[in-house]
Amino acid sequence: MVNPASVSPSSVGPGSVGPGSVGPESVGPGYGYPESVSSGVVNPGSVGAGGGGVSAVEALSRLVMGTVPHGVDLVVEAVPEDPKLKVEVLAEAEARAGERAVLASNTSSLSIGELAAGLERPERLIGLHFFNPVPVQKLVEIVVTAGTPDEVLGRAQGWVELIGKTGVVVNDSPGFASSRLGVLLGLEAMRMVEEGVASPEDIDTAMELGYRHPMGPIKLGDLVGLDVRLAIAEYLHQKLGERFEPPRILREKVAAGELGRKSGKGFYTWEEDR
Image 1: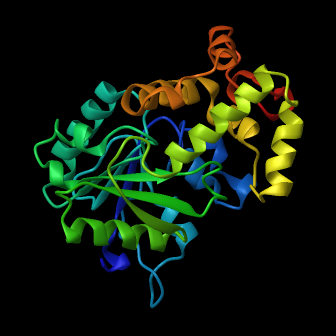
Image 2: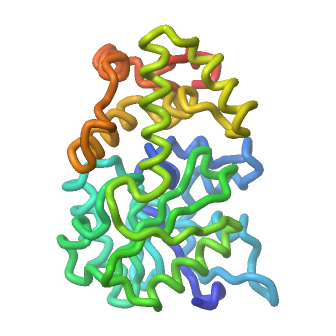
């Protein structure tokens, strides 16, 4: 595993690292993180741990948001779930970061292998899938392909550990492990609302209290963005079959501009949280 003291991270994308790229306001003082994280500090200094290094919070405050400086060790791409856009951003990052840099996509469902095919060094791309809300959720899915070197995986694991999160290693496949299960649950919950089985609030309460989910599937969909949920569902429907067909109520809400928290309304009303 990589020595965390050698890691210099960078993040490229309009939002925080997390599915749906919830905006940078999600990674700010309100969650116990320094304001410099949400504003995007440009400080590519090395990041250490213990023995004269810096804390995980300090490490996060050194994330470089936007343009990738030369010589960084890790670049995390967090642009929207558009394969063409992601490849363009990753290719530019690859050209700037250097041959030894590890590139990571924060995609929650797109194939890492297919994204890597557009790069000169495809073996150096992995998935680092963060979960909403990013500052609170401990899990990071580390997605590898058959060609991922042990050295690249080790460096990614070291960085995930450095920022105080728990990594699980998943082989590249549509939806990985978490999105494949989580999206399926969310789609079925939406169908239950559509069929009048129960209200969004009662479905979410049932999962939160009955199954100890930190957030119910309907509210989570609103937080991630219903347009993002729909795009992922359509991708998984194409790759994995009918069980991922988006329900009518999801398509209708997206068509009406009811995207969840970011638009102020989805299955819930979020006006006070915008």
